[in-house]
Image 1 (cartoon, rainbow, N blue to C red):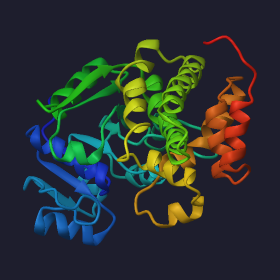
Image 2 (image 1 turned 180 degrees about the vertical axis):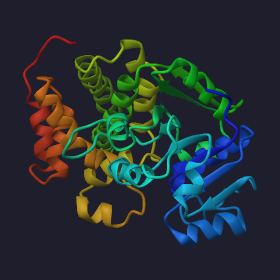
Image 3 (image 1 turned 60 degrees about the horizontal axis):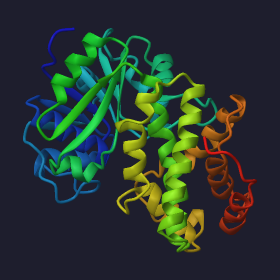
Image 4 (image 1 turned 135 degrees about the horizontal axis):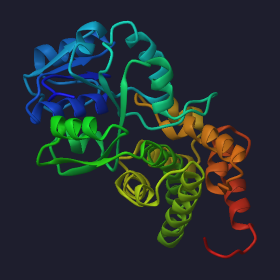
Length: 332
């Protein structure tokens, strides 16, 4: 494909706004689509997303709109809506997206019901698109403030992948190329579930040793799941796998980790989610991961424990007791 002149970002949340800032810093004019009229007004009038990313000044080259048609006219698109909303938004885009446009999926998760990865969802809903996936250890606030960040950008078409890296990469935002879309998405989805478990350990004050053990055993689950799906080992141990797990499972900035901390301290799922504006992806991804793992005959006891707790089938204490009562085994 030819060089990317303009970038369209679909999604007016913190992550979409941060990625719009990335593209603007890389020198691209940006059109950002948001469904919320107040978000569009704030970005265009005040150059700030006051609701989702307050206090971050946005480049004047970022223009917000409620028109998908205007946004989809860009040379490349970044799809940055929550994972469970990807299909619906992609279906809306289908009537206005020109054929052959690259769509970089920046959502992390597995679709409920279908257990499909986001690239599969986009392939079904937007068959005219060239899909790519962006994932890795990156908090929206860090990215929006221009702090150094490294991520993985996966695309099956190597030439398109190179062009996309050049379009959005700059000194403080470094995308590493890959063609392993499956591996990149495994890490992005499973780490959210594991981060909830790590947060529970902290909320229950089980100690730093238990936290470290859970990260390591969680990574073993992520790796088993990825291998069963054909992911490459180097992808799973790279930025989008181990790197993103380390970030998400150790930082209070992580919505999934902080959700787990609150669970560990005794708060209910409904109470925690009711007080949040942003989506906690791991809550919805947990059952999809567990169901798909079962079909692959892959054992994922930590993810299964999280799924049981968020579904109300087990208490936090019962889930912890079940994990600690598992038979001793050889490390894998």
